[in-house]
Length: 158
Length: 210
Image (cartoon, rainbow over all chains, first blue to last red):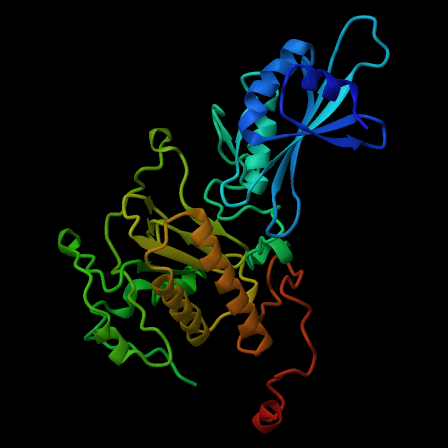
């Protein structure tokens, strides 16, 4: 089962893996972290000019960390714009993924949040620092192996 | 009950660090302690960390306090915008910890002395404190500060210390060593509802122990 974009990428010799389609029928692709920057540029040139959302999650305890990008091709006079979902998996020991800030500027805060919550290091991000947690916070709160510190005001906030 | 045992040889400072007479007037419980192990505050240029064996010998049930001597002519320093306009603190309801020397009478906030931590205990007066229970909290505070020696002086570390202190205060409350102050301005029993007939003063002590 190969989607349209997957076929296009194969035609241009770009390494990827097809992960099927989600419940809305949107094609899902996996890209290696080392390829991701060049593929992102190519996808932008292809026409995906809108990063609809970027998020990240922890796949499994001790497993990979995933960074997910939902791309849309915005054009005039189009009812059903082309969409694609890209997943980039990074190992937990060295979670480095190239930033797409220089391709889609809206990735700025989203990637900062992913860094804050899961500790994914986005290369070439202009200002990669914590955005939700205090800057002196230790640990990555949304990782599955995170143990929340026994802070008083978290459980007894009066 | 073990009271605070201060070995004057190891801790060269008197217990005047938390205020004796003025405390009753102000109803504030403040202590400033030095964060370094046996740091000599007066000779801060020659702060050499002595070996800990000296302290381990004299260490009894409670960590001896090393309160900072009360200073005179304290002025608020490093509080303006060019210093960031902020301070390192951990502020929960019963525990306020600041990485600065705070004058207990004038509340001048000297942020140049970041080697000291100041604890303001229960500023909203939710509990009834005695000197003994105050000293227990202060001793636990000193113990925690010694425990976290070497950690980064960040808000996270102060939160760890402050949270442990809050848990300790809750333990004191559950053990019946402190009580809710029924004249407090806000009476919402933030550490749990008071339990009737628990460690009540009318009961004989044998019943409480059993």
